[in-house]
Length: 154
Image (tube, rainbow, N blue to C red; front, side, top):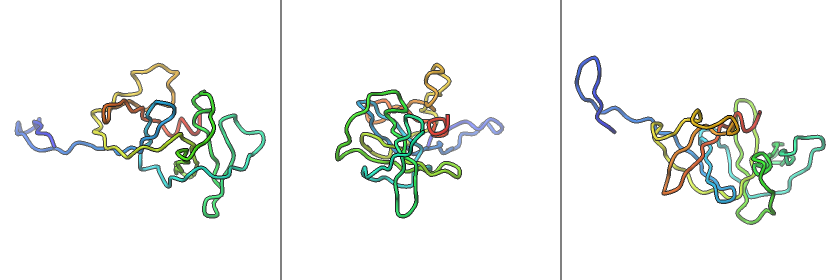
């Protein structure tokens, strides 16, 4: 906690900082983060059933404990070159509003706690960075925090 001056009284009080937790993952050499509040499950890559006439980044669907879940390939969504899956490739399953969606990433790293004031706002970037919610630093590397709604639905 940090001592902050309370304007109306002139006194200093301990005011807790707002902490947000992010699940970090890697695509190529870049590190990204999803707000942990949206994460339902993390699974190893599994058989994906292709669904015709979908956007190029929609890989297909998986059957996860009896629930059919659409899966997107984050590399395709970012316009990156696709690569073969390996034993570190994961599907991060998320709930956003009433939707459950899986996102294929190269590897899951860790959960990090970030003080809200340590996040650089998306407004600092150009419109090409439409999936970016902000950027922060964690463990000596930059973490690009993703706007899940824009990533999944724009």
